[in-house]
Image 1 (tube, one colour):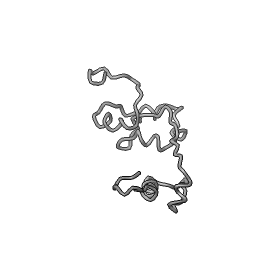
Image 2 (cartoon, helix red, strand yellow; image 1 turned 30 degrees about the vertical axis):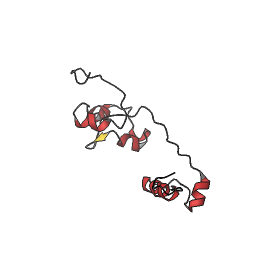
Image 3 (spheres, helix red, strand yellow; image 1 turned 60 degrees about the horizontal axis):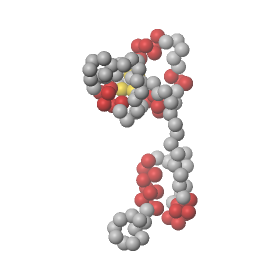
Image 4 (cartoon, one colour; image 1 turned 120 degrees about the vertical axis):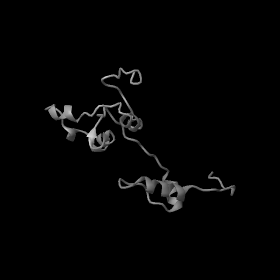
Length: 113
């Protein structure tokens, strides 16, 4: 529809697709509309989600929902490797560091088992 020149007024888009659409000029800046809407309250939204739809300090999308990601881990593997359990302060770098420490090449072929 966008390519044909008749874009929809509203559509669902994952955050991973946002950069392509906004940088290509396919999305409308919502700020002028939101400034006039007396019911709009950005504080009602998880700010990280809103940030994912911002481009050059303007909002181009509003999240309709979100779901938390869950990470399960085997405490025995962490204990065996002497790695602390994940907590709320973990970053992706912490995750990667722990994964490297826990991963083993038990048969010596140079590949993780």
